[in-house]
Image 1 (cartoon, rainbow, N blue to C red):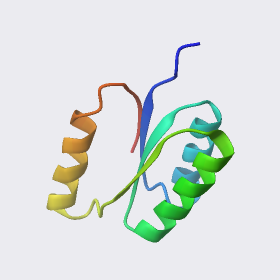
Image 2 (tube, one colour; image 1 turned 90 degrees about the vertical axis):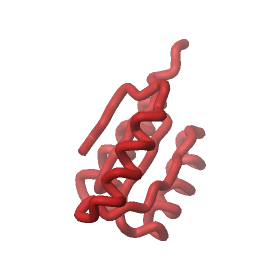
Image 3 (cartoon, rainbow, N blue to C red; image 1 turned 120 degrees about the vertical axis):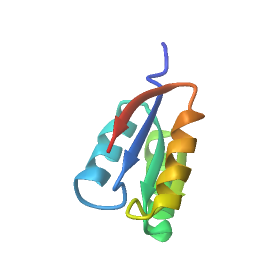
Image 4 (cartoon, rainbow, N blue to C red; image 1 turned 135 degrees about the vertical axis):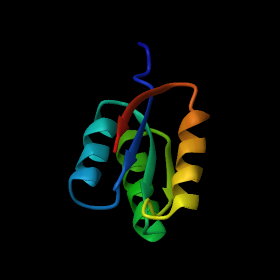
Length: 87
């Protein structure tokens, strides 16, 4: 079986962004989860890694700040297996 690839989700720590993470993880996607709250991202990482046995990379960033936007863009640019971007 071919792995579904990497998904990057912004706004991942709550609401619809979090639900996208849950659904993508259930389908076997590894995730880069982006949001301002690093603690909530770490909790999401623990939950999804344990439940779905996938890789989850928390990426704290505030997308209202130019330097953080640049960091996220650089990380996405390094993703060799990017298959989904939820922004």
